[in-house]
Length: 220
Length: 352
Ligand code: B12
Image (cartoon, rainbow over all chains, first blue to last red; front, side, top):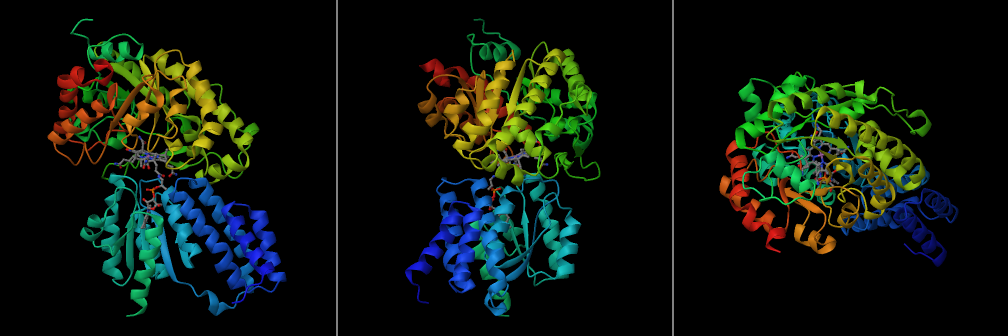
């Protein structure tokens, strides 16, 4: 795609607006993009998304912290709200559907919320069950929605053990559902031992892993 | 200085700046064990609302492994409940779960004017239960060991009362609003600290768990957390310790200036670096891993970790956070015994 300097400037504004978590300037830039006839898809993938990637990098570098990530995502969504109605449907096919939540007895949801944000930015449809979610609820919701993936989070060693039961029940009823688990006390070894399909130590790796899983499903 | 200081004297003398024979081994967080609870025939879920059971369970750590303190309560919901939130103790779940806030008190945009601190705060929720447990503990083992309690710092408390994501955003967008609410909540911390003192605690730990740099930046820490901590420590007139979980090296200079008798940190804090940053004052407590070490490892690993911790410059060997209840008594004994045996010799402050 050819970009002239006026277009490039708008794309930069979108990107910087996300990095500076400035919802208003992102909205303005999104409107400008449409006025300039920049394809909505390009505005998203060459403007908003690189901004969010940079936010993620700044978080890893410990320049940004959890609030900055949340607000960067707010700014990104402010832009998406304006741009999304202007894209052709086939451009934005959903990558996959995911059920996500923090297991019963555990209120630590900061990490889960970051994972969720990354997934929805990347185009997954995420059903967030929240925190302190009864074990049964995961099973019910997975069966009800027939989601391709189930993501379980736990930050405590007492609550983490609940995952084992959920994994077993879901796999019994719906063996092709891909299950990924995470949270500080969880490990690769535990994921394997409990029969989950994957584990990731942070949101970035979680997303990469998820994309691989969904691809493997679709190649069946 | 006699060689037969009681645990209580050792803990309190040190907190008050008097000489002691060795670093004490205790904490200012939960330290009840499944072994202790089982011995009494109780379940974890029934301890939180019953002063006698709470006190009896808290005393088992001294009785079973010689811990030099007894601490109540065990959960993070007391203050929020007194301010109108409801708690879930998971009465009907078989395995051990920590209580959580089921229903938050603040929905939508918080309004400082609408947040009223009840006149009868000390009669609300489980405050009377905790105060009674303190009295019972004092009568039971209070002559020998230090009796402690903990209270949430204002931002951690506000995080229990409202949606945390919303609070995080507000810290940036409306810091003045957040500060005016936190200012009110400092009253809660101070009022309860005084109330527990009347009931008999020897020290209190202020836990600003939500303020770790794993989550919030040093800048926010300075802007919306420190001002209130300053106030709290200025208003408490007995030993008070500031504890923050997670990574704290980048805010430890601020913590050191909060006015606490000591600061307490977890494993993610590099204590050698902390000492380089803050110098020899104040006292630093820490920083044993609560799960990987105390639950999963063996007594010899515990011994080594205790020695490393002392070597890095801690003044009292504390767990980094609540001792995980399933930690083995063997490991906990190894922890206490190592401090007893090697504490004096390994203590960096003493070695100069
Ligand atoms: C903030 C915090 C709290 C807050 C939580 C607020 C909230 N809404 O989340 C509050 C103050 C409420 C709290 C309460 C308690 N806490 Co707390 N808390 C923490 C703390 C300091 C930080 C956690 C955090 O948010 N980290 C930042 C996020 C971004 O990282 P993360 O969660 O690891 O997420 C990343 C990855 O793990 C991964 N990930 C996460 N989920 C998923 C899911 C999937 C599918 C994948 C693939 C990846 C993935 O990606 C994320 C982003 O990169 C930790 C200590 C620490 N430093 O970890 C203790 C800690 C988790 N808490 C602990 C304890 C003991 C408690 C309490 C029980 C205390 C008490 N006495 O009541 C209560 C729990 C009540 C309950 N029943 O849940 C212990 C748990 C110990 C253990 N062995 O289990 C810890 C480890 C502290 C310690 N050192 O001992 N806590």
